[in-house]
Structure formats: C-alpha cells, structure tokens
Image 1 (cartoon, one colour):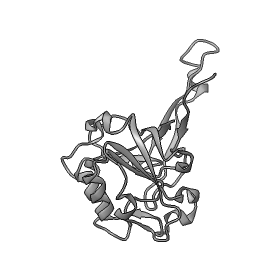
Image 2 (image 1 turned 90 degrees about the vertical axis):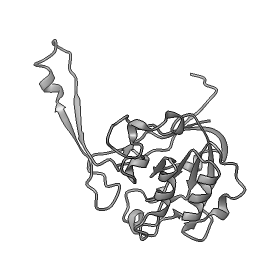
Image 3 (image 1 turned 180 degrees about the horizontal axis):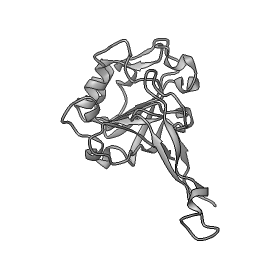
Length: 222
C-alpha cells in the first residue's frame, strides 16, 4: 500500500527473561489461558490465548512521569496526552562527542520549545550486553536539563541506559525535568534512522493510576 508517510519504531521489544536495568527483575511472560485449554470454553475450532505478564515498570523502552520522582506529582494517568503524542521532534546527535556527559553547550542554539528532544548517543547498540549497564553510558547533565526546561522542551528522550549518571545518587537530571513536568523516555533505539527534525514523536503508556513509569511503543512519523 502506498503511503505518504513512514512510521519508525524506536522502542525495544519486551521479552520473557529480558533484563533492562541491573538489579531489577526480568519480565515473566506466560499464558493465563492456553489455546488448548480454551478448546473447552469455545466452539470447536475456535481458540484464544490470554497472556499474562509480571514485570516491574522500568522494562524495555519506558516513560517516566513526575510521580516516578515526586510523591503526589502527576502519575501515568494524569499525564497530558499533548506531552506524549504528536510532538514535533528534534534529534540531538551525540555520537561524536568525546565526553560521556551531554552538557547544555550541545543544545544552546536549538529551538526546543514544545518539542520532543531525543538524544542519539548510539548506546542502544549495546542493548542486552554487559557493557550496556556497566556505568559508562552517556548521560544528560544537570545544566542541560535546566536548559531544556528553560527552553520549553515538552519531552526528553535518550537511547542510553539512564538519562542520569548512575553514580549521581541524587539523580539531578530526573529531578530537574520531572519537577518541571517534562516526561522522560529512556532506552530508546535506532534514533539514527530519524531525520534531524521535521517528524512527529509518540511515546504513550497505559493509563495507570498510582504508577510513575511504564513501557511505551515509541515511534516517529516522517
């Protein structure tokens, strides 16, 4: 079918036994109702599978709402759809910088207001390897987070293990962005397939009350 647009998937596949974040359990995917068992419920030749998944919220590619960091702040159910869907996107290319730290200097001259700002570090090439979570991942600095808020970014995403340096236990980038109500999408992938700008970005989670984080099917429309 001919289309005048292209959808680009920038999220990881969630699989049974997959570790996303060291120290957190892998998802357990199983059948609640098997196809063979459903034969006893439905008409001959009619079968269904009802799946079951047990997982922590921080699995695969996921979005953080302010509630993830701040008690009483907006949870997944309170997120404004306009902060998650049909956003103008811009890709910040970080693959050639020599430092792990992505500072405000890299985004000073960018028009970020109302946009999904996606940091393309290339770290997703190490997904599901020991190196992915060895503490040497690229991260966004506090001064960059403060600039993103001041510049009016609507959402911030990264293809790295964490948007913060995991050695910084106060998690300054999470703290700054989520305090300002800016959702964070972590563990993106294939950002090098996106144009620099001129695309729409979507990263919508299930509308769950009382949770701050949940996996998303993140994608861009070009």
